[in-house]
Length: 434
Image 1 (cartoon, rainbow, N blue to C red):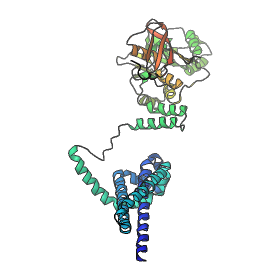
Image 2 (tube, helix red, strand yellow):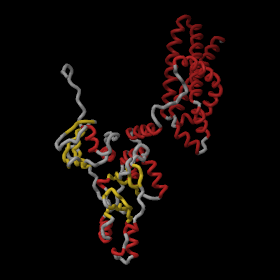
Image 3 (tube, rainbow, N blue to C red):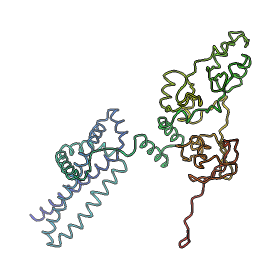
Image 4 (cartoon, helix red, strand yellow):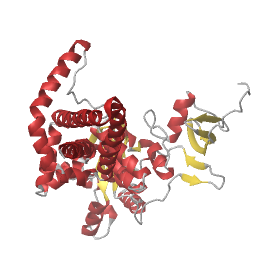
């Protein structure tokens, strides 16, 4: 009777030990995989369990140490107790039985099963286990601190520092990577991925990368008769027109179509009575190296939507508007007055005909490609950069997984290209030479 009582007591201790091992293993997995953003959101909504989870994750080393200590203590204790009991029952062969039995029980019920359950729904499991885990951390915390101190002392001579959370990726790169992963898994649509990516890029892009280059700026000669200026403003698809004198780069003001129409109405519809230059707004010049985030803040602070970009020598390089920056986030913003010239024309054979002045970012967004835009802004600039020369018409290049064929060239500018994705190289049969 006494032997049977000892067996049942041993079995009960082993079961309790396995349950505790499963608790520690599952808690470590759930808390490690739980979404920090969701926990902070729940805490802000008043969820007490989420607040406990966040406090535990704030002392991550102590939490992991406590979980590992708890898991190993109960797992080793259960194995030792089982070995002792089975050795008493079966003699020396009980060691083998105990090893096999505890290996199966620990691996299946104390490792794989709890960690699988925890990883399938880490947020929910972490919230359910918040209070018990907090109690375990308080109970085992001193042991974890002592263990961590010993580990630090052992690793210090080797120059290894623990507790230093220097992430290889910046916060922006981590968010971008998470968005890309969700897009591949189907949780985020391409348009949403592009918008989030564009928002994250604002601090990395400069005004020079989104501005309308001076060669494409639509301007008006301030010395023209008022009738001609009114006619040009009405024919333009834009509401703000730079005025120049003597040379195109000498901008003397910016004429707003609304101001011109109000003055024209006040003059009884007679353009000859207008003094156009007096209606022009003061020109705002900004460095073309300004980041888009800073320029967006500047636009909002000055309550204006238009600025001229200048280089380090003060020369006008182009113009930038609030719409240009917003289009980096939401994509092309078109209205009934916009000139619909995208410059990207897919062909039936799978290639794409692209105007040389099309920005690389716009082409990547339209075709879901990933051509590099670090060294050049436009697709023509990319070809020139890679070719190290201005290629002639008919020249073709292969790089970045695409074939670039120069279709047209005007003087020193590439005006049109045909781009075709290259098929992935097939492996050579065994034994075939290089």
